[in-house]
Image 1 (cartoon, rainbow, N blue to C red):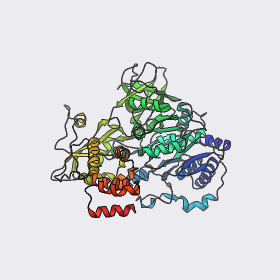
Image 2 (image 1 turned 90 degrees about the vertical axis):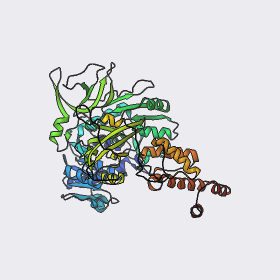
Image 3 (image 1 turned 180 degrees about the vertical axis):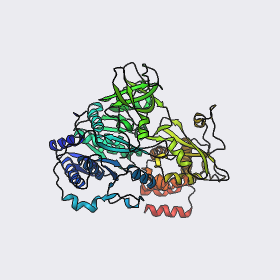
Image 4 (image 1 turned 45 degrees about the horizontal axis):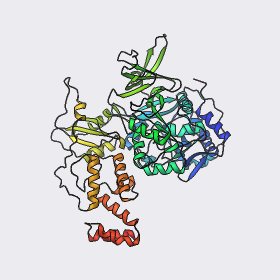
Length: 620
């Protein structure tokens, strides 16, 4: 719809209304609307000279800093489109995305080693500080451009069932429709401040960054580990008087389990995967309002919304946002009656143009449906099962294929399997999801070895990390002699997913806890990992742990011992019980009064003389 207000126009109006208002906060500084606009304008004029305009896609390779926002605004102001390139991704995945998208320009900041990426393409790499003088010479006034609403706004790469990620093309009218609709439900205005915790390569970040600029509000860019650190989230919510916080269910659970007491001035927005009723009821008690959102990347972030109330029923995904239509269809594309379960199809302004440079895949997933009135409408086939309720809202049931949501990330299990099967030692791989609790969903990889081959879990993980981001690495790898099949000869994923998880130790010696501290950690880990026995030298993550379980462990230990461990402590130095025990013991001693130190040292049993000396030196 051409009457939608474009992101550029909305942002520039907000600059004019409140030029000195804070647009974004980062660490202990903030950037005003006026400063952000001027820097984006200078970049836009510079990009125009380089030929950037409609349908020109620019890669953005940046850390979570204000630079990323300036890059995006500058590209949009120049009429181009942006493609986030996450520095946390493996280089092989980044190289594939760069080649597949055929971009001819990448913006980055100087801290990143972009030149280490290996690709034989004539791509212009603009490291901002190297071109700072040239860019600063450009005008800081708004550009006078008329940009077609059907032109490309951004491309996001998502997991692909063929073993390779695929790019989703979102046009400006789809982006503008999303932003306009979100101003109404769940709502945002210039008095709001939102906490931005989502990685910039994930479409939920659009809500956290571009929507505030569209509304005249402000947002806080936090560190990469913020989503896994309940204490940091609590501190930032309080410090910046956050009024809107969007997160996936697992992140909300972390915040609550960290001891968050709630905030009646906070609007809680939940999406990315199904919202558990227990979480919904918790948030209703803790927050001013709670909103459940639903939508795939292919339909521009969120396609439905509902304001959540306490109850016992499944939390619905609600009604369509503006200029959006939702159908529940059977396998013959017939519209189903209320209450009947079928596949969710989404149409309207938010539907993507398709998959970037993949016409066959686009034709498969984006269909045209003839409606009862004789008109045709273009729909996206989500692969999600759902039903329409009597009140006109919708309920999400689950996936109809091998695509899953794990901690908010959309993952094609086939992609992981395809990469595993490229390894010479692996003949067949099947990845399933095992749900152990409302916030603990683990990917478990079962594999058959080819003849006379062996491979360790660590070797498999190392190979996968070359091609897949960390969130796509399964928690457990289990070697099996046979993969169970259904009666029609297909892989029986239900049978695999229902198997009890058994950890083999490859004949390693089980070293039992020696100190009370090690015993306390061992009890906690066994409970979380559902294991009968753990050696104090076993690696937490090799046993099936993941970052969210690590955070739960940290929260419990911090509360028990009144310390402030972080996820970084576990990732860098505390992946075994023995290592973590030493870190905790040091923290306890550092926080103690001098009169208590000797008593504490005496209570720490099992330490060698050498360890005691090191501990005493660290105290000094």
